[in-house]
Image 1 (tube, rainbow, N blue to C red):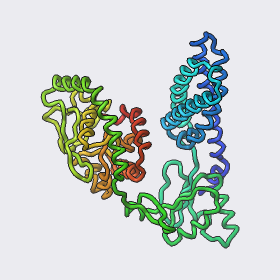
Image 2 (cartoon, rainbow, N blue to C red; image 1 turned 45 degrees about the vertical axis):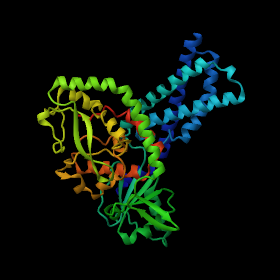
Image 3 (cartoon, rainbow, N blue to C red; image 1 turned 45 degrees about the horizontal axis):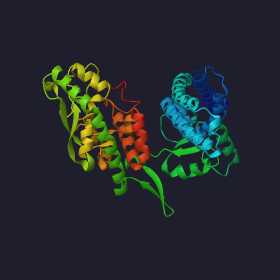
Length: 454
């Protein structure tokens, strides 16, 4: 690590930068809320500075600020992911509105506030703050190269490459070794680490314990690279009766949770099919008019418990070009796709018939997306790339999933594309909850139209 790099590492204070950005976001939120309530004042009283709106802001904004901080609307994740920032500000605002309403009711001072101003201002605030959060995030992110933390990759006799904004530090070049009996060594390590947020350690197995002891007093998060654990498919580190264990597999969710998940599926699928029945019939007619063949496309996919089922989609290709095994991935301007099929794919409308699969119990609203049996990445079948692929079928496949809302969708051109999706699916299985399903459903609306849909 060069002297220039060391000076940059110790003088560039990312903690201060983040604090400034959080304060800026809070100020933007406050301004947007004030403008929303001023607009509500104007609509109700014809005066944007009327007292009811000001009084509402004085009570609501502090409540929102506390809830937003607790809700991690001001966090590294919120800075890195503008959509996540917008969602968290919306949820914080919604919770703050409920708390304010309860507070006014409990104190019996509701008569001092205008319900119309409160209602209009609340709606405008929620959408205005979410929009401003997204726009501010998209404006700030590129200026800082989407880097809001400083991570050091400390390499000790291991050949490793840094990723993203990680700074590679060679232990040998900086005369560093895991020696707790040398105070000067500890001081040198402290100077190298500087103001970083996290140290990622790469070292031989026999030196992990020594380095761990060395870094425990560094006042930063320390993580150890363990490629050997990836080979056995470790999902999570756990403690069992004082013993450290690795979670390498997780079975299906319990009976009670399965009942809850099935109830959610039916609560969404049944009303959705009733509302969408006429539009779906019209879409089917347009497909039949546009090209000969059936309106629905049936394709064998692997489902719950590694059993196959026929997944339904609106047909988007010409009949003579249909690929039941999914051997050939679709590409942009694919000649096999019909004119209406292109629109259906871009908007994800072609997936609507899968609500019938949900009704049959073959699929769930949320779960790992089922893949065509012939799908490949770099000319290798998915299960050949990673044997953990079959583990994702311990739960019903879904219309949407954690991988999809993270933007991991479209063609799998590289092996890493499959691995990233697989890791998201296994993470979903390991940490299922009803709340996570509801959040994924809410976030799906933001990725229905995406740049990799073709």
